[in-house]
Image (cartoon, rainbow, N blue to C red; front, side, top):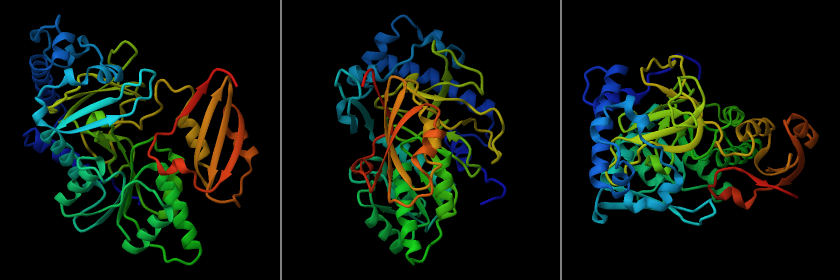
Length: 421
């Protein structure tokens, strides 16, 4: 796996999309400036929500990124309450609506609208981003939801087919033994999966190899939909002996945001389709290298453009050049949610250092963490006291064995907060 990193294919893709013979950072920024102005005019003309939001801001006042901070951030609450008023096209142009359950107190679900053109943008990104780790003729096992047309697995499969890869559309892991059986039968070159589900599959696979099954070589694994701990990646690398790539995306981005290159550090982003910022609590852009909230603006979205959408994710841009040699900026590994009651990534890193743990759930009560660890089987080399000693907070620990039912549900890991026990 060692060697010189290959240039991210996103650079050539972006160069072609914006019509340049040679891509440079100034040329990319000039393109984004034009698109920001065009997007501002587009939403103000077509969307009742944006027309009202920007009623005191004239188009002449927005001349590019230097003026973008004049625009207010929009958040999850705005999308939940104003989704239909954000639309810039008629309902006849809507091809897919994604409804996300509420995690707040209002109970109002969040709905994101996509036109056929919007979904094509995502397929195009997947088609080019996936060539980072796969090529024509490769089998790619998709362990993400695949059933619904226009869903992430369906769009990914279409992107793979576009350059001749062979998608194996399984869906989210619902039966670990069945998935491992499929692995040995099909022997794919690449797997795309949720991090915790992929770790569960890896431990089940290792069990079968220890029982005498003949191992096979994976070319790469791509992890998406949740925080990817470095300790989890190291465990997967140990078991499968292949590079572990990461994808950063959310439904609001159109499912795709950025992907790591062969340098495996940070994400190269969809710079032709989105403008990215890292901002402070007042919405002001932070210098490269400083942590803040990740904010994006869609530049090519037709149905429901999002302008300065605050993700709630903590991140930063990397200052050093990418090992792959690209001029594209890189977003560092996305950290915790800004509203998280404790440092969940740090907790995740520590827990997955211990072999055999497939997942965990926790509840913070005052200053004490009530933590449940899930292990596939007994026989590990660590004790609960080893983990308690490694954690940075007071912890009450329970260890359970077997596969918990929640692992067959694709929900982001989180720590709940209670004021009293």
